[in-house]
Image 1 (cartoon, rainbow, N blue to C red):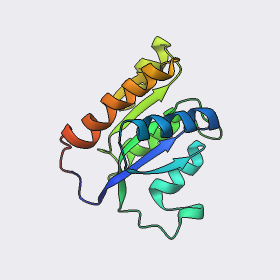
Image 2 (cartoon, one colour):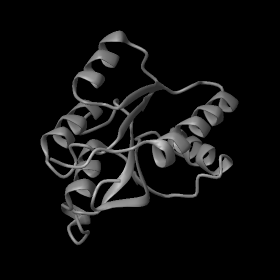
Image 3 (cartoon, rainbow, N blue to C red):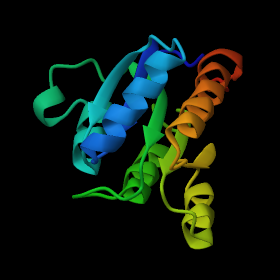
Image 4 (cartoon, rainbow, N blue to C red):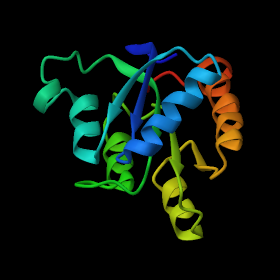
Length: 150
């Protein structure tokens, strides 16, 4: 685990209230009880991670254990968020899973090109979505070994 990582926190960056509720429900159904912080656009996600705006009082050195990032976001899209995360030393190695409805090859290539750790297309079927989250959580929050910062 990275120094300064808040092991029990997931940052969900999702602008759709329906997809937010679906993701939170899928996490709960899979007994993933981690604290979830929700950012509803790219600016809010960056403000949270870099302790700016309404999160200015937050300790910026305490980063979440995992970011679930939609790419179709208002203000700053997910690719812009990812680019900023990878440019900053304290978030460079933060696990980022793109969780989106897009299956466009261009989006997949761009996501990985900018440093996403994984790219997952949101299943339309709720039962499949629950299974996907059920696999995602334990891997990224339990099994995955993160590198030490340089």
